[in-house]
Length: 345
Ligand code: ADP
Ligand code: MG
Picture (tube, rainbow, N blue to C red):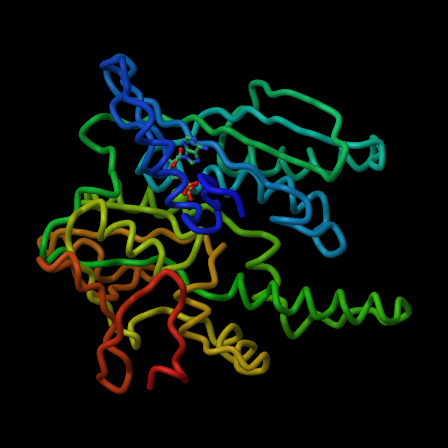
């Protein structure tokens, strides 16, 4: 390897983003929040616009062997709306850039846009533009979502305070477990195309992988209950990684309890079937698109009866101590690389 060459694998995705971030400073007073949150915050009249972009690549983020194009279209929108939700904002518009090869027919494009249209309906957003290009390799979909929020309601990753309660919505790990099922069925199908995959038993986990929803319902519920989280992020990479983002940005430590982390029954059973540790799937699986947020203890009463919000721990003063208390009452560090229940016990 020649001198002066730094491998990207050595610095990782987050290191690369930080490296890019350091090369730029903002020039406009309206650039309220730049690189480093779920969406940028841009001053616009009375309130702010939030802008987020995400790209899905065939072979990296999805496999058309088991991802129907309609679901793919829906998911591509949902993952972007999820970042808008993570700012406590309401989405209004999307633009879509598509790179596609002549391997696809007009009917295939229609199926993709049927999913996109369904997502535009359910999240109440307008498709207002985009770009179309030919692709030499696979299908690429890049979506930018734009939302709006009043300045007193915008929630960043950096606002948590010591003793704030850490909350998570829905359940975690199922999308990753669902992906394992789909990968296995694909192998079976490739070996014997006569075999029809039997996915009924895995309906929930497979659905979590193929049909994720952005938790806009939670954004509305929080507003209805008069609760503004102190910090928030959506769970795209896994609970552990997102907890570390809240820790780093809020300059505090996180402490969570394993027995409070919500894991669906089917996801738990299927993880065991695949010889995976369910809590590791929840911590490091990713693609759940649930919301992770912190609230002041004073707001606990407002949310305590919400059926889909779980209280998993709290923030504390020591920014270097990000830990989970296991079911056996042992203390294990939270790392983005993953924590193995079996080797650490
Ligand atoms: P998320 O998982 O919420 O979509 P990312 O980890 O993709 O967030 O991005 C974190 C932050 O880094 C965001 O503010 C995003 O806009 C920014 N970012 C990511 N990639 C780049 C890039 N290549 N150039 C500039 N900013 C980037
Ligand atoms: Mg995000």
